[in-house]
Length: 229
Image (cartoon, rainbow, N blue to C red; front, side, top):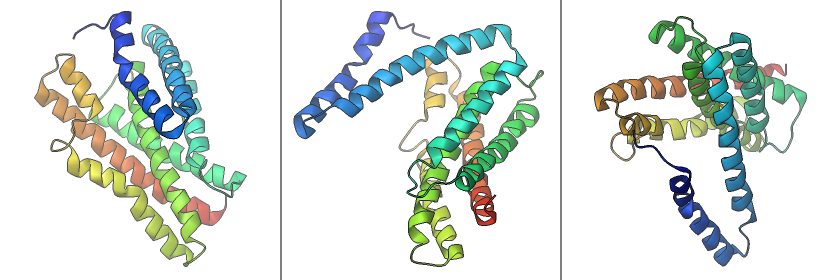
């Protein structure tokens, strides 16, 4: 794998600076993307140090604490687009992400990868990030669509339409992979010298995992939302 120096990394941010310049020119402000870019750098540096610490010590309780944090934050972000938020909505999102994400994460770690011990952070944290991020995005799209549809149609029809709309990105990703795009994980593995065929097997695992997790999280959300937990 080609190692990036600090100067190389700084050069790699030029496209982001170009995007900021274009937004300043066209919109008169680049504040949002500037803040987002700065946060991106700081957050990645922070998580890099945290992961380095976790990989060295492999403390299961600390890994579980991070997974809990990821679940709570993803639930908060998932319901952010909703105009009417409540504790019941948050609880539905949180429980859906926890159950749907944990189920798929456990399946991959214990059954597919057969990790021993299962809590090895170099596997758990990246895979959990993929599961919860995709579940979060699906829930966010589904919940927002459900809220808007609910004003015009019956609950069952609104949930059906919202579920279908929220799964479109996952279906498109499955259709496009290998033809239009090479996913980030596969690209990273190939760049680091892993055999393309080995990278393909891992990518099949990941895409199946996130598609399943998205669907299960959505299904659970609409179930719990109806129960008003």
